[in-house]
Length: 152
Image 1 (cartoon, rainbow, N blue to C red):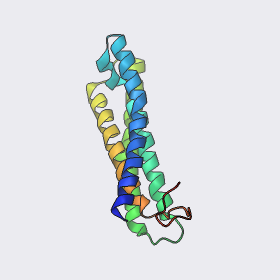
Image 2: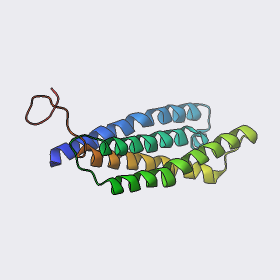
Image 3: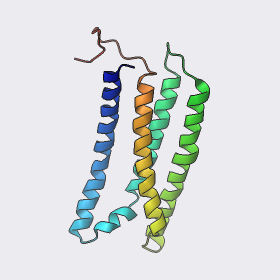
């Protein structure tokens, strides 16, 4: 993939991540307003966001694998999809359950789960951007009639 196209795909994926952080900023502002800014880390929005990013990364991988007119190394794609499921999505959903249960049962979310869900969110955003950049070169660009493939 040309360097310019890779930069464009990274910027597109990065923009999606930045927009996805907006609800967390709103929650931070609300928690700050009520005098509990550190409660932000106990909110399940982190795990929800991580689950969405891991899921979207998985969809991008599988879509690239099924793209017509492209040769994809299926073994590598399946391996990375399995890694996203086993090391990303499954732990994220478990953490989400524990965060919700902790908040509902005792009103407290253990610090370990708070840290884990924030780390998984960061990992999921990173995985999403990397997968988006890699799969961008695997999927055919839509035909726009322009030689450079950019939409006008």
